[in-house]
Image 1 (cartoon, rainbow, N blue to C red):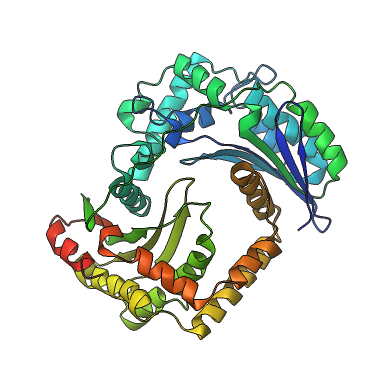
Image 2: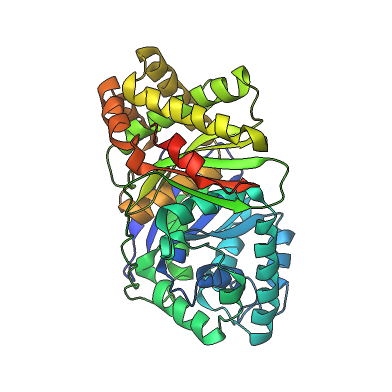
Length: 423
């Protein structure tokens, strides 16, 4: 992967990755803000603000005008809000880079935030929250983070709650934008068929009016756990969605590379231990996977599956047994080699896409302020040894770090606390 970085005089950072074998470009603008930066009264404001950027600017004031211009290009566009970053992107034919850049910079620098549009979008967001309530897989993941972090920003829903969304006012939105949408807190990345020198010149000009300054900092996440924890949400669903995992490492911890190999062996593909044991041998689930999440100051490793309600105890016991085997028996050299080959192949496929290249570069530049190339990342993966994985397994697979969240018709947490204690 070839790329060039540049820091502009106004504090904005930009990265351009030229890719000649494509006719597309992906433009990303990423900000280091999200729901972890919110107060309880304003929970959901990062997400609300993300929606409002598309509702009109000084140069494009008419409702729907921004979307119409993007659609006219045949472009793909979207935005998203997470716990610690918010992103805006457009993927279009490379010949449309100038107009795509003009639209994205326009919505971020000169939004109107009309009161009537705020009220319309408030209704849209409330419907979005209702949609998420009807998505048990997403709900299970939210319950898991609520269980881990409790009543603090890290444990709140990124979309907010109906009570908080209804009370966010225009002045709150304007103030929040002014505190976080600053050049020092932004990264612009372009990947695709484009010449870096020309791209840098155009980016600098397009974002020259973006405000400078230092963003407000978030509070450090507080973690406190001394025994297994369980949290259920009762809901009328056709299957129970379980999320069972352990606290692990943040995004700056070098152990994350060994954890990636462990996660791949645990549940990263169709040859993983979770897939083999839960689906192939027992037929308990259609989907089962292991995920890891790395935030700036916390992290976790989690197994996810959907199972028959009455099979939840068996499923929980089996997952705990699989986790315990990592700590007591470890992993084989054959499994480690297989996992590394899978990671190499997955990365090679991913980086054929301008989307993945832009995302990779943007997140690294935003959080690390430097960029490891894919070969450098793979070199760290290659250096992982069996002993590294064993140290991690002994560290994280312990009763005082394990948590279970599920959505379904369950209420007796004591049964599952005892199951988790067997770790």
